Image (cartoon, rainbow, N blue to C red; front, side, top):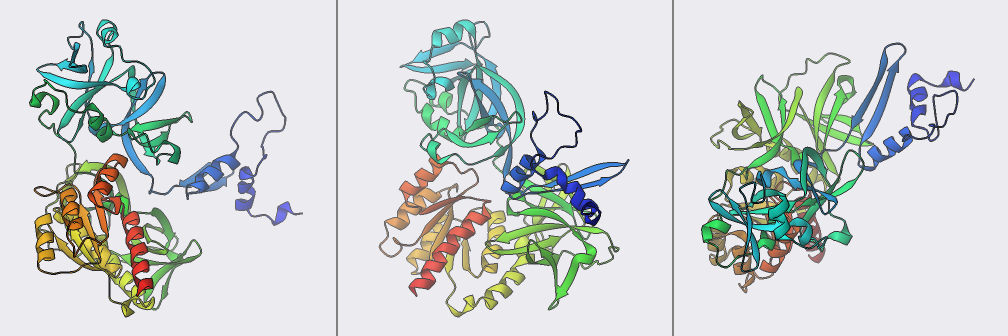
Length: 498
């Protein structure tokens, strides 16, 4: 019989066949649920996998893997004008009830609404009215009372009126649809647990919409900055080679995999494993190979275009989002610095130290060394970001000159240095990246050099501001893939022209 020839795994996978059911009879509620074929197709559509293992009388295990390239953030879900929206938690200072009875009355000054909050006057927006979903009625706000979400973007503190604030959720951020990109108050979208799609509010765009209110004291509309987690970073915590914790930026990670020890092979002195139809080279943080036959090893997978490599670790501990203060005086090879994460001392791993030798080898085989390498000027005031990006860029075959300020970059320009690309942080003390871009575009020698802007909090509004200043492209500070794609495209154009 055909059934006798099937393995247990093949029989279990019948659950993913369209129309398959384990019930013997059909009732009025049959077909009401979502089939497992739909579940698997949705997981596969985002680059994930789902596996099933079942043992009679003991239970069934589903293993679902999804890519880590989808950003996850904490957000407050609010209601406004009969619709729901998500506000990033990092931009929220507090919630306040408006109205005379609540002690937080709303007034209008020169036609603009302001909220009395303790000793401050804060600019106020009716979020529903801002989206043209209703008319703003400030008299009703004072009479009936509404919820004001007090937000801060940079040094600017303001409030937005919503009908209700329901709950806080961890949401998966998806890009804004092409049809909605002209609405700059949204930075993305997400799908809630009930299947509904809601928009994610862009705090920076709302801050710009508030504008300047004549007659307000400067300290009222631009309050002293509250403690902001500007250095918050999503980190992958793991152990490898020692009992201490290690971490690396989650944005650099493509996937987490478990690899059987016996599936690891050695080719030309390099540990590799068959992975998604190709060979994945493995890099170990230590040389301990004592894992027993049948054991699995956690592997952190990194990709760069069509290239990929895996970092073998001992244990994946957690994924956290924490303010990151780097101690830059780390002497150990492969360690970018030290930080305190969740009250523990953690080593921040320099991924480029481990992966650069492999990519250098690949670049040589690809023949890229025949042409002069693309010269990149990297401008960033953060030592940590320079330490993270420089090895990755050099490992991909670029000649990188890092500097810590716009003034240093301009000094190289005045000295007659030439570069093929300038990659600059936007947010820097003194002369920022926007001013640097304008200066470069005004210079006859450097005016045609491609400029890439970096920001830890990218938004469509900031990207447009960067474009007007002279930047050709704009990517997130931790969006390594987008940066490498832009650089790779320009390098190919340069090599074709040569």
